[in-house]
Image (cartoon, rainbow, N blue to C red; front, top):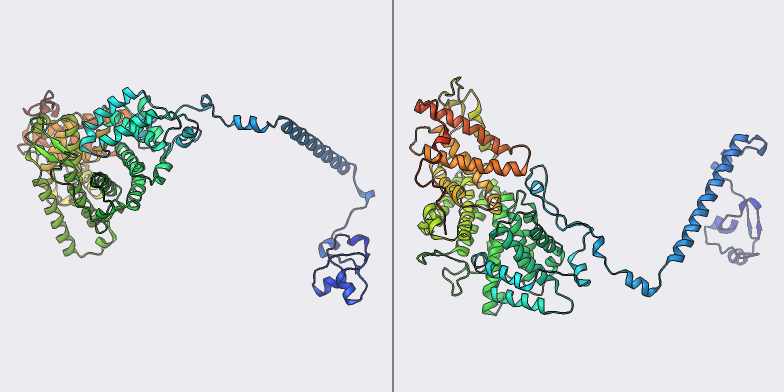
Length: 607
């Protein structure tokens, strides 16, 4: 094979190039040339790029260029020398097989502190809650399980907390079965070998729920933060757990905890996964289990998931996940044999199935959501929308009428029921109020309603006086009052009475904040519109207390007032000036009226 000196990088001989066949470059003659009986040669083929370049003669190279080239070569050589030295060092330090195995043992002293949920982080509107999981440098639950580092408080301490949980909140919201949970806890502590991960998360969850919901422990307290971090560290494992319903139960408990924050986004994200997990286990179907005891607990867990799904769908204005058409479970029995989900008065004269009432209300919540936010509802005619609204109003009215009347009187509720029972009734009643406010367009986070309330601050609508007394409302400059206004006002009073005198915890305060703000603005607008009504003084006593509570919340949560709280304060000033106009009492101060009613007694508490 004849090869030109300047063509040594050619990959084929002349024949193979011309015929576009693969050349094996065999010497002295390639296989194809031998086959065709021709000389095997490779000649130069100059490319345009090659011919266009003109290589400078060596004599034309300047001293500066030569110096630059030498400097680059020295730099490259020094870098290569450094790299080779580093590789030799790494090779010398490489551990043996046994040493490598021992090196995988985790040293927990090197891990950072657990990222605690600061109140300022959770309550400031400018920030959001930490995303799912804890600090990425902190070991996950799976790693902790592999290294045998799943830790809990002493068994005696844990059992005391569990007893309080199951005798109170856990009885009314039966997320877990007490007997099986207690046995699981004792078994977990009895295991000397590797501990199970999901039971560990479940125990942490119940501890966190007791501390947060029942004991009013602040979110930044280390013992609560530790439990919540432990549970969050196994979120992935919980979503993939299919051996039983324990993983689903823990997910639902996490959702309950995250609901009582300023940002329910975590709960909204988790509920979709929880419902899908419940569906994959067949919980929406009565035919999925043949075990009567297990079937009862599965049914209770499903209805809790159903309630949370409808709560969060309405709050987020997003579609719910569990459709009624895909559910054939019966509602919880009115009076079950095991008393699970039953609220009972301290005197024993009132028994009420809380879980069933919440489930019935959740069905109505779904219809409210469909009416207001579904794509189908947007295509309804005005007549169809009016008919649908009337039906929903009737359903809400029937649901409220079916409640024991003692639950609709704040004084009886406080006197006859335990603290946690009152908080649960408050939550239920606020969900009812949210439906009422939304269908009548008086929800505080409805932009149209907020804009209408802000109109009262305009001098065009209410002329401003220099002596602290404003003029009458110019009704021509403002849109008409929402429909069923008197019902909204009447029912909002009970909600605010419960908030004002019900000893709310930090958790329940944020859980009910949206409805309490809505009720506050409803009462303020009602005083502005009707400053001569007989209930002005009692309404104002509620307003004073609720405004004070929101001011305290705002001081802890943010350096600047929430927008709706600012609106409420402005409406409060307008309402005061309207009352002064009617009463001709320029010195009237609503603080003087704060405790004018007998029922507004700060010492009126419940057992």
